[in-house]
Length: 494
Image (cartoon, rainbow, N blue to C red; front, side, top):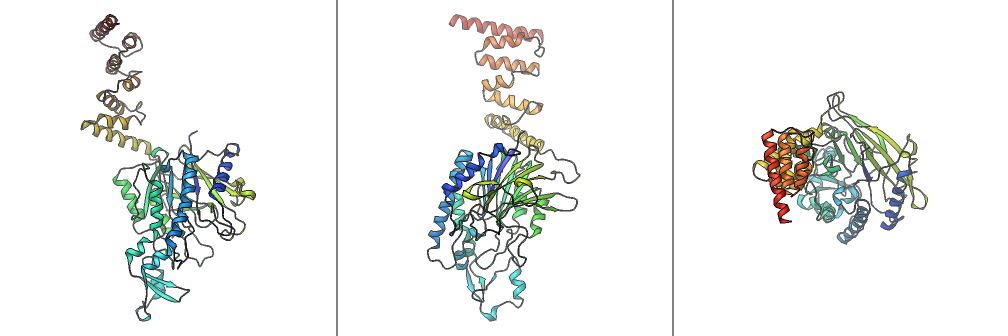
């Protein structure tokens, strides 16, 4: 059975009290992976990896050399991800999806864009203003002082170290969508273009004084419009972000409003992956929009945090998310570090044996609604694209598109493929495509291709086979006479 497996890791920030090296971490992950095949049920080795934020620990407010400190932390994270990618995916970084977390937000850069607010300039409804998602005001409890974002350009650069790291990581990689710093999201294709992962920043307004979690305004709508305009269709849409959907304890504000998830559901996202809370939580969120779709939300624990940063009774964790061949189910395997830095099935995934959770995804057509044949939609789009290339004299481009489609059961696509192959003079490919000709025209084209390859005997054999499509007698005689003349010429030359 064909499946697709995603390694889901999160919160890579290292603990000063309990550091773990890249060498030890990679060795532990690979040792655990070597046991996947003997698990019950067996776990498919990862085909891709998503990292749901907090790549680094970050630096404290007021640290003098924070730029170099951040650079060193990202260098360690980059080394870890590159080495793991080389081990798991033969170095193909297009199979890795990254999103920032709150630790990736540079506090020192954020405060450089703020200025203290005099008491007489404070808004009358200060509490309401501070709770507004787009408010420029910030409150410092340590100083008992109100700040305002005064230089939005400086403030916006608080993620520059993260984006520098991302651009260095993907340098030279052939991504389906280019990396953008300014949109609030980035798009990635996995599984040969069957799966879309939209990585959303949940850091709008998050800084040294604010732990809030919001998507950038219009980010979800912008991503949906971009996919619509480019006519991209997928069997599964996955949303990736950093923050959780609820907070413990309740007075904390670092969780994503459930309205953001409703918006994702409305645009066809059926699986959500996040981190931040430092413990795996699986299957507890089935967020429903009445009469529409639903989303399964899965949290990964922290891969690198120490005991002081982890909830009581929870160790370092990661997930393996295995998507079924028909994209309607996921198996989530929670792996937890035990003594000696060894990972094993987690006993902390509450209510589920051996750290395994099996979840049903809603259909793309909606609950109880008709199924959308996304494969056919994508195939039709590709066929139309190939046709347009043929029309303007680019047969090689059309061949490249159509050769990636199963055209045997699509008569029009098969006809275009044959035409593109013939016009590109790819005779070997044409002989393979027409090895079982479906019509008299295809049999004639097959004979022509074999003739071009100087395979006269093979061409003659196809004409003589009784189960080939029937040809008019005069056409068959003309082809045979031509082949016999060519065979005679070849014999004289030999």
